[in-house]
Structures are given as C-alpha cells and as structure tokens.
Image 1 (cartoon, one colour):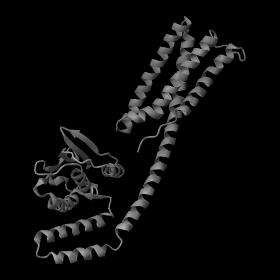
Image 2: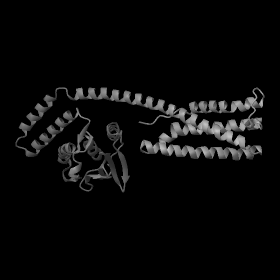
Image 3: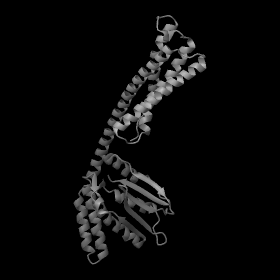
Image 4: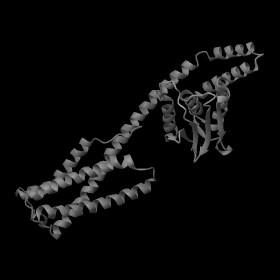
Length: 342
C-alpha cells in the first residue's frame, strides 16, 4: 500500500505557528510592548525580527517534513535501535548546521555578529524548537499510520467478502463437475492419453477447490499441482513447451501464496510464442531465498491485451501474507519473476 503523506499545508501552518511563537517575544520587545532586560534583545530591529522569523519558518518546515514524511519514504528496513541512533545523529548534524548557517547569514545580511549572550540564546531557542518539532512530527506520523491501518483493514474486509463470494460461486454443485469428469473418463477408457488428461484435469479442479480454504501452501504442494497443469499445456504444445525445475529439498516446505506457480506459468504461455522454431522453456529455481521463475521472451506476433492482474494479484497476496513484494525484472531478454519464500 502506498504510504500516505502528512499534508504539506498542515506542516506549513504548524511551522508558521512555531515561528510566530518563537519570534513574538523579540517583536514585542522591539515595539516596547513588553520590556525584556536580557541582553539578547538589545540589538532587536525590524530586519532582525524578519530574518529570524523567515529563517525559523524554513527550518521548522524542513524538520517537520523530514520527520513526518521524508524519513519514512526513503528509509530502509532497519532495527528500531539503529533507526533511533541514526535519526539522533542526523538531528544533531541538522541542529549545528542550521544554527551555524543562521549566524553566517545574520552577519552577512545585518552586518553584525550576535554577541555571546545572543548566541547562547539562539542555541537554546533552537534546541527548544527542535524538540517541539520532532514531537509534533511524530504525532502527525502516528495519525497517518492509524489512518493507513484503518484503510488497510477496510480493504482486507472488502477482499474477504469478495473471496467468500468467489468461493461460494466456485462451489456451486462441484460434484456435478466431478461426476461429469468421471463419466468422461469412462468414455475415453481405451484412449490412454485422453484418460490421463481427464485425470490431471480432475486433480487440478480438486486442488483449486481445496486451496480456497488456504492462503499459503508449501512449495512441494505447488510443484505437484504444477506438474498436472504442465501436462495439460504439453497436451496442446507437445515438445515445444517444457519446464526445468531445480529446487533443493530443504526448500520444499517453504510456503508461498496458493496457485502462484500456475499463474506465473500461465502468464508465460499467454504472452509468448510457442512453436517448433520458438519453443518455450520455463525455468524454476531458488536464489537467495527467492523462488525464481524465468523464460526467454518471444512475444506473440498477434498482440494480446493484458490487464496485468495476474502478477498484481500475486504481488498483493505476497505483501499481505509475507509483508514483501515480488520482484519483476527483464534481464538479457529474459522475463524474471522473484517470489519471496522466507
């Protein structure tokens, strides 16, 4: 699911409020509405107040954006402890950079250096500002997480209802189909090839019905199902279609979303030419805890429209069940799909 962002307008309003609150005492002192005896307000001027306000507004906006949006868009998967350490170090770097840069442009624009007391006040003020901004940004991010969580639960609820409806439709008198297949099998008893085809088709249908109750199945089960599915394809394409499988035994009990391999093989058959001159070979193997399914790309001469729903369906189920996306690549004229197994 796409990570929602905290509204830029909301961030700007908060940054504006923080800037006003932090520069208000100095502005009031400038117009003698209140009287501060502290030396940090001795050199107050309109240019001084405007410079502090504008600079603080920009810094506040950047810190809020970083802590509520940017960090969550670009960070990699790391431990919570490492994340805290990195963000702490980054904020220290930001703090000293912004304060030093402010002192630099202060002298550049106003032509004077803040005295020692003013410099101490600036450092102290920016410490307070950073603490406030980080705290507010985390609250904003938490609200977005809650909204994302509610939205994801609603989507899962809708998908569950759709899945239940699909399951009900698929189970409408399944015995009728099994009885029909058994009758067909008795009719073609003398034709060994036809009898094998019907037997494989019956197994496929039984597996699909039974898998409707599961989300994940073992790789061993999927390969057994794929063997029957492959037989149906080879009945049509003969030796022009083949599958090479190299799966070590230690991976056979690893799980993946049900019917994943069938959908991937079906996708290759749908989009590639299969002929004597251009046979299609699908290779399935393990690489770095990913199940790899690849094939040489031989596009069909006749264009076939594709909605991309097959791969999208696999990706969504992998993310929901394993919190990982599938990887799709085109390398050296090979179409490669990588399914996470761990």
